[in-house]
Image 1 (spheres, rainbow, N blue to C red):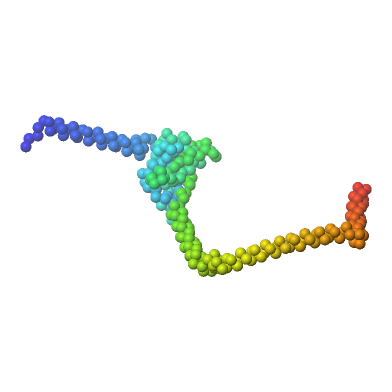
Image 2 (image 1 turned 135 degrees about the vertical axis):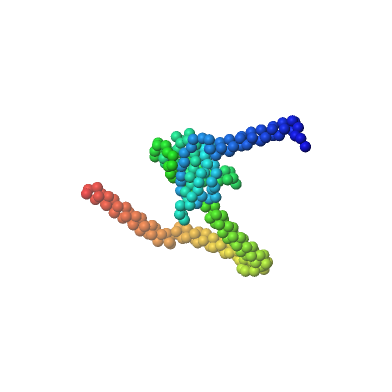
Length: 253
């Protein structure tokens, strides 16, 4: 079967469009991964990279400025992360800059966040420099703590449920008190008797006060109370005079 000129045209057009799409994809990916820009490399060390992978973005001031170039295990407690950064961003990153590991949204990919620094120096970083790092929060430990708290809360709720069930069933002192009408009536009687007793005590106290006031005005006992008042007044005068003598003596000295 011979290929017609229209078929050849279609095949050529399809191939041309495919090449354009491929070239556009290469330029797009290369631009995203900084393949066609002048770049520098920075590194930092972490105890845990928390799922960071090679190729993840590097973000500065909310803008993607590079990618994670390499991740190497230095020893059992240290992981080195190497970043490829656009050269035009270098002037904004100082020697005391720090890098941290974050997430692109709540459930997004991990990325490296650059903090510019400049508090202690104004010298910008150079290619190959190592900058400080902030270790990420260990999410597994936080989840384990919340799980333990949830388990404890569940045990506490079960215990409270059992106590409430026993109280509703009339078990224990509180349960018997709340569910036994006889005990409730006896408690009411006890409270009423206590109120009556307190009223009688108040009445007795008022009567004693009245009797004492009357005794003070009685001519037979009036002299006794007057003598008591004079003795009390003499004590107060003596104390006042002693204070005045002490003050005068202190002024003279």
